[in-house]
Image 1: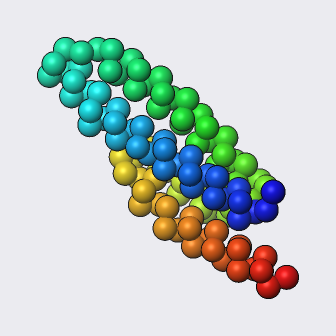
Image 2 (image 1 turned 90 degrees about the vertical axis):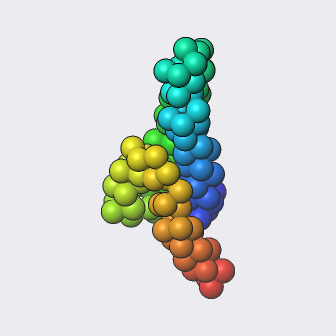
Length: 107
């Protein structure tokens, strides 16, 4: 698998994880506290937890095998903690992916 492909996979997982975080914070949590529907947080929390583990695993895959810089890894870790952080971080990852694809086509 190419280095750019690792970053593409990470971007895909990051997007899904980001949406799960948004659903947890802005859908499930309000339902829990305003409508007393605890099941939403339980389900959304489990899904988000699994996706967060996948996020971390693919992040380290992209770092180790995809050549993602340590600075970009640190930003990705910070982005994972902030609502909409993964979406704000994506253009930087996309640029790195495109740079790698350009290098691969030149070789």
